Image 1: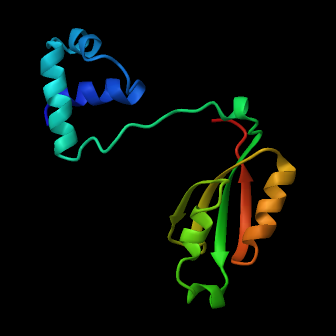
Image 2: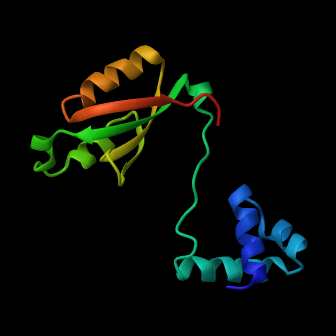
Length: 136
């Protein structure tokens, strides 16, 4: 991977749908040369995929929160707690973490009442701490 590949990646991070022609003008290569480099980065696993960015407020999401969870000792022996939480519709990500907490969940909620309902639902797995996201 060279400096041009890094510039291409930087542009794709900003807009994954940017045309190869536009990227090529910026870095001084032809569109086919950009396409070849992008395909090579995909084949090498450097580019793993492309994501969709959604305006959640327009979909009625008013509350976003990070929730850390200390899983109850008796639940720790139960396989799949993380997968069950990850499968909940509100959960955007669910990561195992180090420290006193076991999981860190990013959740999107219609409102605070919906958040409270979610916290009650995951309460069967452990004790949670919630930080509401004020601004991204």
